[in-house]
Image (cartoon, rainbow, N blue to C red; front, side):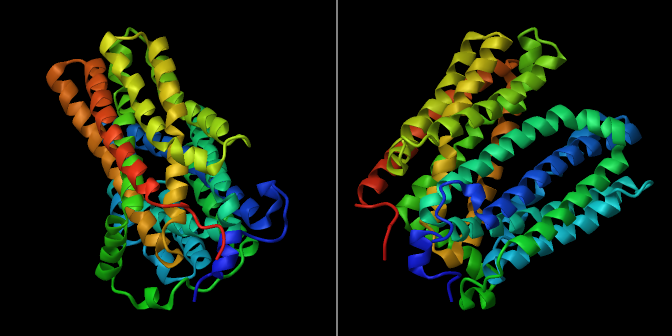
Length: 421
């Protein structure tokens, strides 16, 4: 049984009819749970870094601990995202929140040995992927086709702003509260998120009875086959994975700032430039005068344009110029919201969880590989600016290929997203 009927999904919720998404109680609840969780997670990342550095006085261990806040999602995105199709999605979200509350609460205990702390962190991060898959698969059901991309844009803006606020204020708050209390605050955000979802989101049945009994290998293989066999999904995935090129300036922000003669403060400004551009780009593309079909036509050109500013790094720009380049790249990178939303709407409702998990794991992998490769190349060449410029050139070439594939796939469809049964 589907979560909702075909007509209901395609036409969207009938009540209320207001264009303000926050008038929809379920969306308001999902947004509130997401927003406060983002802030809590950023605070926890800063607190963990401070805690590990205080105990070890080792930059290497501190960096490794920070990496553990993101890398486990790569594995769980493939293996655990399918839980969002096997079980009711509200149940998956609540369960993941409660699991993370307990694990992060244990991490907050004073005197926790570092190896055990790292193990608890990995387990807590494994729960991120099924939660994200369930939330991402549930959002189109809550909003319907007409409102879904706008809702996804609000979530993306919230994520970027949350990162900016979290990085900017997380250090001050963690210093005031202390590492252990900061982790306890993060644990409390998971409890609050679980309560919000439990009482603010409707209970819905499993999207498909067959998904409940499907074996893990068959579920993962089926999602991969679905994506590969549909050239629309395949090209959208390629457009999404281009993030692996654009993320490189973030990974090399510190060495580039040093080469350009900037101080420690300039590293934070460089890191904030791309997210700020994403927020601006999301707002510009979300204007009422820009229709859904227009945004889909712009996917290819914007993907290419997002990589073009990186070519200027070959001219050894100053920190100020680099900030502007990253801001422009961020504005263009807002195409990722439309690409992701279209990917979800073109995926069968009963397979969205696993498909989303594979797509997001691929983005994580590409970003990790891109930063790691960029670091290795910089070690060999001694110039982070040249490495970023080369990444931009390779990104432009790949973006042109992905854009051409998307144009062909889109041209084969008279109407990308059906509006009626």
